[in-house]
Length: 443
Ligand code: NAI
Image 1 (cartoon, rainbow, N blue to C red):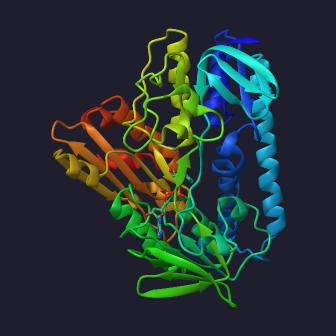
Image 2: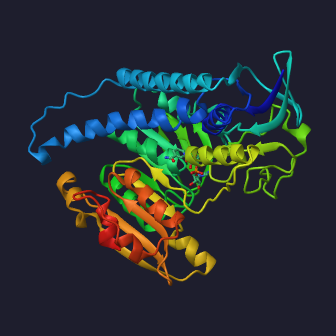
Image 3: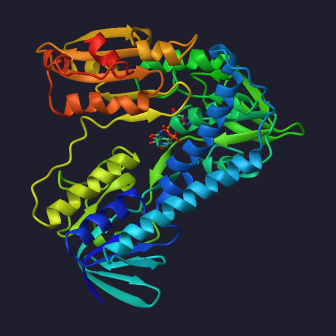
């Protein structure tokens, strides 16, 4: 069997590439060993957001009185929350399958093995291809901390399917996964402790905003142990003992969220002899081409951004290169969102990065309460909008705390991507009243 394009991995990178290539009239085969949609659809972005929406609905019901609505909250049904999550996932996975089928993509359920740049083996069959796309994603990284193999830890996977709540939960790693689960389990009444080895949660995001979010969750009862590196785990009678320098905590359950690593083993990648950088990451150019002609890598496997929306864009760029359509990957305006309540969203440079790179900038910052719509819908809550602007008035970065940050951050992403000057952005007409107007106010 001979194809124009063979894709390994059916996550956001793989299915986007398959759809784009199929749409362009290329013959496409896509290999997926588990379920179409990858981590994002099956055990990442979509399921967590579905669970977090139930938690948010619960929070809103609890606070309904702030809006003069009398509601008696009788609790929640955790097995039903988890079942709804499964229903949402199933629906979206079917949607992906339908799209690929519509573009005549051949979907092969099985584990692909790379023979060379033009051949893939799967279930006794050999598939020949002119172009190969590596979209194998990433997996949870569990560091070899002493004792870790002797405790019944959770990763995000077990946490997503939890139908019986523990009383206490220790989350190791205060990155995006750790903090989103801290938000979810806190809303459901679990006593959460986050252990983070850096001096602030959400490393890589704007530090001021991360600390405001942390203060908000501290008020809700989350305990944060910062600058605290876990040294070992032990099973104790009362639960799992988490030992760190200078102390220990005991929790009924432990969730490990200490990062993810690209999946590069188990499918014959070594047969391609791809060039890697000093950190072992596959080198790709602006068209997502690897060092071997005809082989592309997109999504978490490159280890660059590890976000589903980056993967989608990288896949589009790779397919455009295959069909000779001018396009290049750019990473300067990729939004990042933390789906806590309130949400955090960020795009472009942080202050920390600008300082590191020696770029001069000014800060324009306003409380979210300068947006009338925000005040109307966020009783007793505040947030921040922070814009970073260069000496020549170009927008360099935008950082938000407050709902619906995830929905309005794209406006700032467009401004950065189009190298808009603050004056030009300010001239745009924003609908009133919207939370997005906060950008105009801040400018
Ligand atoms: P992460 O790399 O974002 O955070 C891991 C944290 O664990 C770091 O802050 C690190 O300092 C800490 N850590 C590592 N070892 C430790 C130790 N021994 N003791 C204490 N702390 C320790 O990784 P995370 O949160 O697992 O997320 C993985 C990837 O998934 C990220 O690239 C993230 O962007 C992506 N993701 C994105 C989401 C979103 O966009 N909303 C949601 C979930 C995941």
